[in-house]
Image 1 (tube, one colour):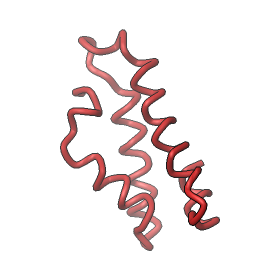
Image 2: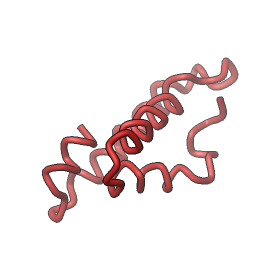
Image 3: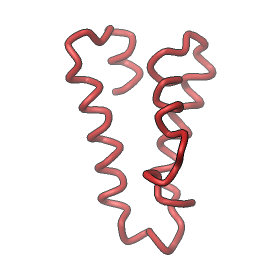
Length: 77
């Protein structure tokens, strides 16, 4: 799999995680995000730590939003 930062629609997946009301969709979106950051091609496997850190950093940015709902916090955590 390519480096997650090269995926053009990654922000759309985050939008589904944060805004979709259909549980099966937002759960699948979360799993897809995790898969994109964990199942890496051998050519970028050495960057796994940085790639996983970028996922965590995005989650922290979302969690720092003072207007975030409890429902969203549970999804992101």
